[in-house]
Length: 287
Image 1 (cartoon, rainbow, N blue to C red):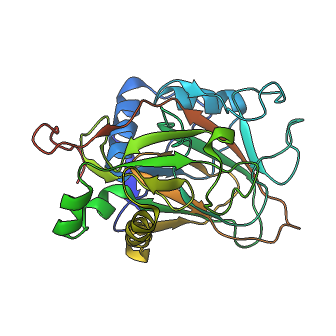
Image 2: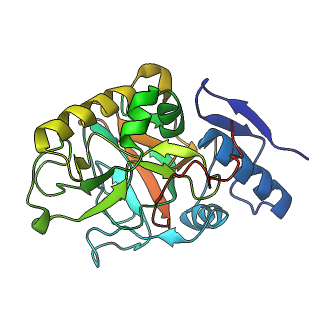
């Protein structure tokens, strides 16, 4: 039977109903889920009760697991990150508090993650929501002159993981991971163009003076973060959420750090983003 997919916002996000992820899903349903993911970029499965192995199986429908690249050798479960302010299964949490600016996971490496799956174990009474902005819709709604200007630009991506992971800053890239990517990329599966910048991790535009780069990036950040391009996910225990890391950027809203919050995260291995070239792009699968 066909899956029941219900959109969650006008721009991205959908809830998939009627599937128990604690059990294996047949190939036909997996194909429908993958197609829905390419269309909506964020899929939510509510009311789930899944083990870590169940989550690994689900991630496997989309690709290989990308283990966390931080705290190597410290994790009891090397393919799992707990986005948490508590200890879970013997592992302390990462990114425990507050809000983080919009970003794409591991965009400061050659191959950012393809996406990730979060499973909500504990959530605060309010806040701690996750915002997702559509990088596809952001590019599509840019003024024509800006599209022309940035068509061949590349940007330097960095992450000040040990200084201030919540605010973009000028840092010594020799001490932090960094990589240069195109500003406009083609989604690797659909060919659809996406605006590949984000406030937290895009340091500068290659070849532009810093002041000019800062002005242009700020304009792109503000455009990408417009409320009409954003879906806000309010977490409930038992939510399973998968997002497309190239079709979206995400951020977290603030919450009371005295309250417990724990999400089990497994990432999907990605490929190096390629520049969007209009004449050779494939026909998008999603609208």
